[in-house]
Length: 119
Image (cartoon, rainbow, N blue to C red):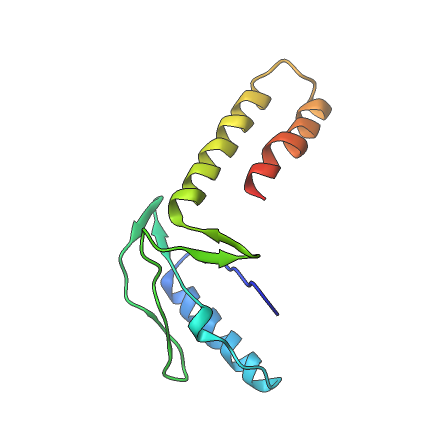
């Protein structure tokens, strides 16, 4: 498995998920490349400064800083790029869904013009 990205509503859910994932990896004989992992915590659209994410093995997943980059699917990304992409996505959605187009055309425009911004 390569390039796993997960989203959770709380820190407790992150801890539960990462511990389960670590157990599953060890059950099937996979090694988790912790040195390639990072985590971020965003609350209310703002980046929170938190501690590293602990694992049951005693390892920790480091927190990604605001100016740091991570590589996802071969492309460098950071918090600012994600924020810019989400703003552009919402701007495009607003333009499409406030236009006088029919609903099927709005759905088609969303699929062709808005979703690629997130991809």
